[in-house]
Image 1 (cartoon, rainbow, N blue to C red):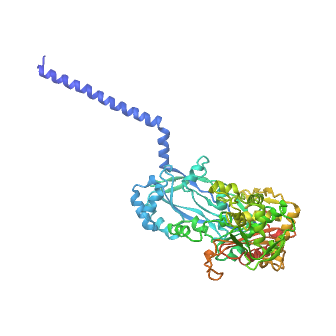
Image 2: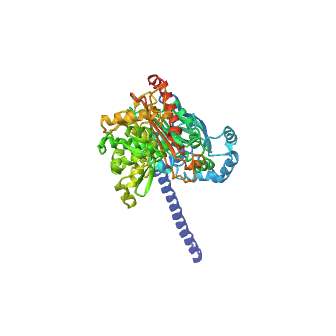
Image 3: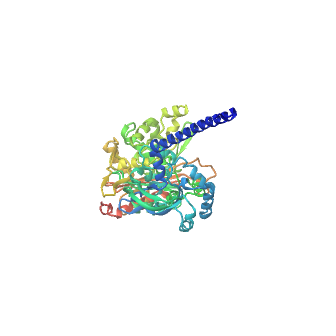
Length: 613
């Protein structure tokens, strides 16, 4: 039976199409099979991890920081409970809406929350981002009440740093803060900190951060489809940081800061035989609790624009002319070089003509005929003008360097300044000018280009107290680990100041005379309890105008007041340096502060007051 030709053609066309359709189906199924093999075999680990992340999460647990104590075991810094707000971005279906609702609940702007998120945009997937610290109980309650409607939002109970005495010793203790991108990059290879971690930013907290911050832990949790925690599967507890016992004496620190009152300045007290820093006060201070918590722009602006510059640690960063305290250096050079005879005397009538100008003495009527001892005790400028001129600025610089001036003391705190000890070579290099003889006269009384820090003067006086041994300032006495292990920080001998015994004896006698003699400039520090030796200094800020008097001179134009001291004089056990900015005379403004500290120190039995672990 035969079909019409057109029917046969139609059948053939249908068969042809069926073959192409079958081929297309085979290709599609082949592609699906290959894709399934790729996903299930080659990419199995990746997608298994993603699936697990939808069900099981690893949450980092920050370690509690170690506590800080003073040398007698008084607690200075601990940790307090804190509630922090976190976001898991991958669990948030509508980020804009979520941020808007959070902002309404806790009174934070969406822009601020966005800024927090953008600063951490490279965070590991599913890692919680801290967007606000130290929530109030009211804020916690509001968030918790709406938590089911806020997928990807969580509150963690953690700890925050607590500075028990507020601003007391703030410049030494420092403060903590959230890790900066630069710090994170530096620590990247160690893997011990991550975005949002709290680290030391200043003072002891920064210097010993690695030992204080401990080791973070982890917990494995099971979450629901919205990222809310359902149960804890495994926990690796964090390891608390080491506790530090500092060399600081809490009671002496309190006395120093109370005595400074509202004045700008610094106080340093030091054990000359170990380098232990017993007191480090810098005024005005700041409250580290404000910087370690939620730092608002208003608080930071107030600190940054404060005329007293509270973030400046004057003890190690303030560079001031030393005034007549520098006469200790000049006297040492006088006695050591034999440039002038030991019985050299000067007749002081209140000034010295040099070239075409007169260099005045602080005592307008003059001191009369004075030897080295009398000039030192009464702080006669005219005597030291002439001695400085005979010695020359380079000799003065050499003896300054012997005492450690012009370079950092090595105290383990960041940003210590070096001060400046001028030389003829320095001026030529720095200013392209020759040194003029008249400039040496200014240097000889601690003025002109010479600048020092209070900490440098503390180490200088300590080397005289120990008759030549100069120890590096230290602030850590003992470190105690979580298992009770101890790591003592031994004193470090920085060097030996090479002076003859008769020179040291003369310096001791002169320092004691400054306080004990009726005409001594440091008479205000005289004590019936203990023999005190010291040296006053009045550092000129600007040249006084003819119309200015002690009574009508604005405070910002008044001289800085210095007093350096040691006690007891038979074997000094404490060195004190006091600086009062624009305080006027060192004898009246600074000496009483040192006296009060020294007497309190002597009253206490040192052996029983030292904390024994």
